[in-house]
Image (cartoon, rainbow, N blue to C red; front, side, top):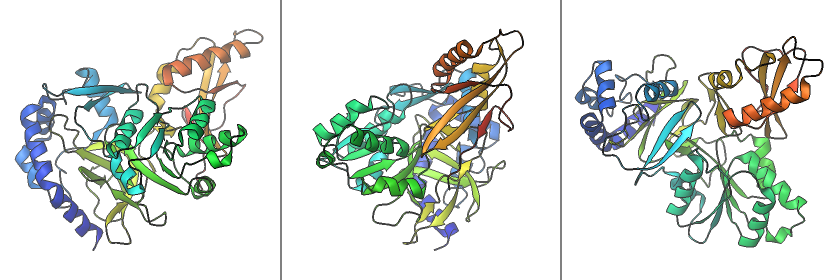
Amino acid sequence: MSIDAALRAREESLAPALSAALTGAAARVPGFAARLGWAGVTVEQVCGSLGSGAALADLPVLAKDDLVELQRQDPPHGGLLAPDADVARWFCSPGPLYEPQLEGADWRWGQALSDLGVGAGDVVINCFGYHLSPAGAMLEQGARSVGAAVLPGGIGAQDLQVGALADLGVTAYLGLPSYLKALVERFDEAGLERGRWRLERALVTAEPLPDSLRAVLTERVPHVRMAYGTGETGLLAWEPAGEEPGSGLVLADGVHVQVCEIGTGVPVTDDSEGEVVVTLLREDYPLVRFGTGDLSGWTLGPDGSLRLRGVLGRVGQAVKVRGMFLHPRQVAAVMDGVEGVADYRFVIDRVDHVDQLRCEVVPSAGSGSSPGEQLAAGIADRVRSGLRFSTRVDVVDRLTPGDGPLVDLRDWS
């Protein structure tokens, strides 16, 4: 089967649910009806393209920045939430971008966990944040959906976490791959008996998983699989269990995923690279043709199934650091106009599979004879509060070479 034929088959299978969601959304959600009007199309025209392999192409891609602007103009949800929608949780990502989790919504992470073999009888440590960002709650929902008990670890307090790993017999992990490596190292540093380490499965996401890091992790965790999703859309794809890594990511059920040409939004029907564009099958929160900003491409798995090749980079200016996005616009909002700073730059590097973020600042003339320590401390606090990142601040005479306020020196090979 070709990629084009596989795309058509998947769209045909999703067409009834997708058509019902779009039709209902056009009637219930003012913001979605307005989007149709701006595009000059009817919902019947949009639904008529389903199953073509290039469905929904009449609607322009909705970029994350567009969604932030819609929410700014019509707070808090940009008119894209049905008036009678039942919101169970609100999350907030930098931007700010407010993300509703609707009562009864399934973010699909349980599909990947079930495939990995996690279920009743497992104890899962969830090392994603439970504060403002959606990842912690989303992944917990996935673990509970397969019957696993959850230890809500978050990030930090590693001594308590490794003690709980040993005492509770934790068998599975959810979180960043780099943080799993840190827990393995902290477990050993704490002198805990190796026999009390029972962690056998890990579903990791939000960071790349290079072969070198996978090799380190699988020395202690036999089954490590990468998954891909976003805070707005939930799980989109994952590495299937029982196959060698590198065979592509299988697509989650119940969500429409496209790869689209950058700039035009035209769906790609071959193995060309493009932006991952997602449509949720919900009429009360119609996130339709949402541009994730992630770059990927199609491939076929060993069984002929349609798969994503993984996250191959970013389309826009935002970069991902320690599993969270950092955008030049956010940096400017925090750093522009800081007293005593003539220039600044954030530099991202990766040391021993862990992201390192530092802020270089050039003091302005007249800052005093020794402004370094006080200036650095003040900026570190400002960054921690405004960007939710801890960072080292270096007061320097000149900036590291590179264009823009963000310089990414990481090498994933």
